[in-house]
Length: 212
Length: 252
Image (tube, rainbow over all chains, first blue to last red; front, side):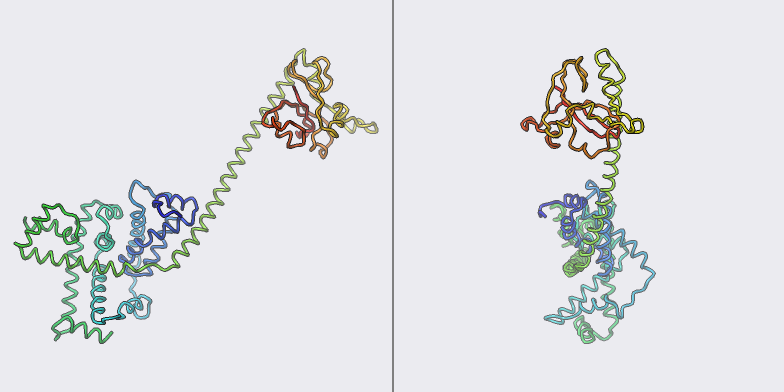
């Protein structure tokens, strides 16, 4: 399969039954979809499910894609977004069990220190803190942060995916970042308040590391 | 620049987006004069840095290979189904086209036959009788030697053994075998087609004027000039009661 084919050309080949074209298209575009789903849902399993479902839809209904309305990547992320919102809405009533699940093991894996343990732990904690803060945002703000800040898309691309005006994206991003800052500050205060008697962040980290 | 205007640009600046040069300068100048905005800008930059760390960290995460494998399997299955569905549609369409073509051909042939037999003229009255080659029914000729088409088509056996077309120039008045729609045409004798041997005996028949490609005649065993294979030749086909061609004669 020539590497200079555009998404549309690959899609046309794919729709005519060319499996190589499908594989090439998947390899080109699945990361965006997966990352979006991962940041939005916070679960690898969910992200894989959504990625699979998005490409299943592309196989079934790829003919519906209209090039004039945006890029294929935006189209796929749009599908992923709709699926995710539906899944998140459906799963809202369930409470995750964190003791024995795979997700828990994944989380522990992230805290395995390599090299400088203290630095590694701090790094992991920071990432986890930001991840949790992003996940706790309302969906309409979260998706803007994910698209614009985590996936570094332009306002136009994000507007295409979310189906709204660029001004809306800007204002939502503004609001989302304010919320994120508040949440991160609150989390830091909570962390320092939960361990009275400690004076510095390093001491807190050391304590955490001992338990880890 | 006021703090309110600064708020409009702070996100773009903190995210290192492209900002107009003058606006950028005035915003950065505002930071020197307003400590609150400077703190706010530092927070935003810190947030951007943290988000980028998160993006970089999770950027290495990939879905498992199983997803690709299962999708490829689904794609293969669905492509196969689509191909089957498309084939059946095409086959159905082909049948429709074939049915329409057959109907049109039948109508054309019947019109042509009507044209041949339905308009008697002084010149071809004899021909009209000849066109309806009838052989007596078996019942009515029990015990008697059964007359066959060969009796009407002299030389057919000869031609079958040696399928060289023997042209016999005749005038219309002298025609005993064969027909001619125009006075200038000359006809040859009927030659049994190689495929006619296995068919049911001829009880009644009809002669139809056709144009046949020489290549077709070569294909069924007639000795023709290969250099003129692309040309067509006029001929009369003798069709049996079942509509299958039994013999052919060539016109000049």
